[in-house]
Length: 65
Figure: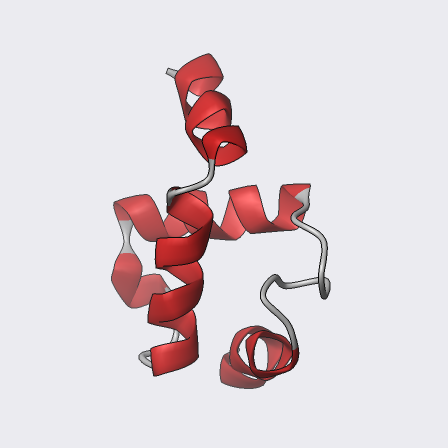
């Protein structure tokens, strides 16, 4: 899993590159409940901070809740 998460984040700000996507909401949502499910790496920590601060992410969580 390390390669699948860390490598894309080393190349771009989001999992699929430059654009925020549903994949980012899904992965960051998992991290909200279980950070240990994702690799321990600085790019992952920076990514989670970036994604969870987005208005779109907060809206998605509000709809789910």
